[in-house]
Length: 250
Image (cartoon, rainbow, N blue to C red; front, side):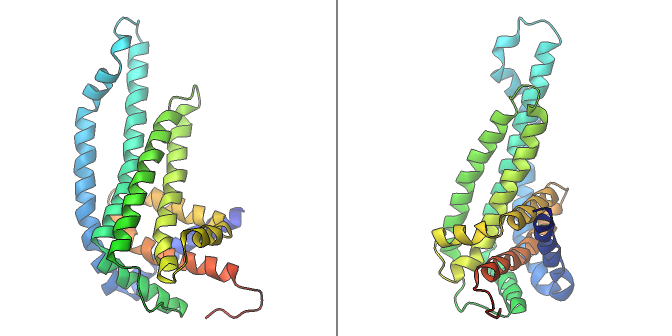
């Protein structure tokens, strides 16, 4: 279990190796990531500036409470809302970047497939990227709401909310990123879920590592091209695991 988790982390590191092997292709992937990152950063800054007013609006009931309870509640609510916003921002960043930069990431995906030795003739296509991005946004909203609710669990909320946010959003990112390789092979949703069950801990390790790097300043910009490459290797691992024993990998 633990070895599989770190194996997934290793696949992301392998994706970073593309910066050395295919720097030209990877640099193209920075363009959409940088544009969307700037938009997400502006939105988070705006939220941070208005967060005190939002917390006051959400807690009219504590005006008559003695200190330190109003301060404690305001601080906890502010931290939970900001944590949920960061989770949603990470998922939104991935969804928008993949949709806007699909032609760039198509090239990274093909380069990674060539390294595996098997390149599907047809890519997933632009409209596939748009549909998947919308679905990812919807799941991101639900994840952010769950993180916010987890923050109100007595005693455990402060630790539970960020941990849950990293795990759930990381898994979402891994699922979305790896789906390109599956859909290019005509594998439907049910088939993709079955393949991912065979690498569930590698999927989680890859996703958590990606999400943690997304939270580093400017980390999302430089990680996104590597995550596209690494997720292709992740999908290849799932396909290899599903092949009958003794069958050679292409």
